[in-house]
Image (cartoon, rainbow, N blue to C red; front, side, top):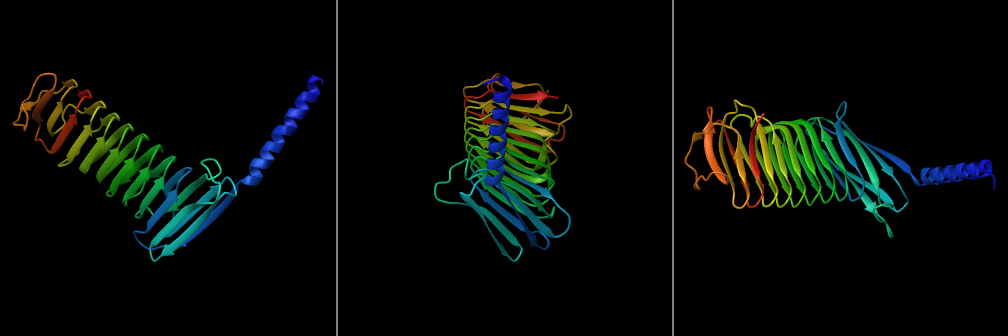
Length: 282
């Protein structure tokens, strides 16, 4: 077989595969009229979910299905919209995949459940509740709501989250907080790393806890905080000139410190059993 014939045959195979994939993929759009502070719930074992604000008092859910082994069910009760992937017999992570794109009012709340994800939420003012296993989770540009995240080992990134109530629980996933502040910001992970880069806000309660993962907190030179940091078996480092403060433990160079800066507007606790802790000056 000559080179031209082989190239032609290869092109035919590619076209057949593309046609087969297109035939297996279907698109479904759902629209729901809602009022103020609508609630949207998406349950999707396999596939991505992206949520963004849209115009008007309407929720638009676009689902892309990748096989006939999965269907999409929907329901609406007053101001609550529920959409979920219905796996049929023989479905697996490939054939059961559905990707969702959601447009909803910015004042609404969203709840997402997924295994593989990824999950992305941005520019909402209501509550954000995310539960996943290995999914990559990203939340950005949200304010005034509660952000509650539970995951096994998927990485979590929050960016520009303000005036909220943030709680993140992870078994082994890394957690990154960039410009995150609120009345309560709590992160707890078993072996994941925690990275915080912000100003610790004003009058907030911040707790970053990891059993064996490292914790790095970066703050401006003029941060106003009351801080406690301790690692039982790991090393603890501090770049700030803190004023001494009474603590529930004995400060010890290299493993524990406590003190205040400025007006001590926010409380900051950095705790680990064996991970390294570093309070770093920006």
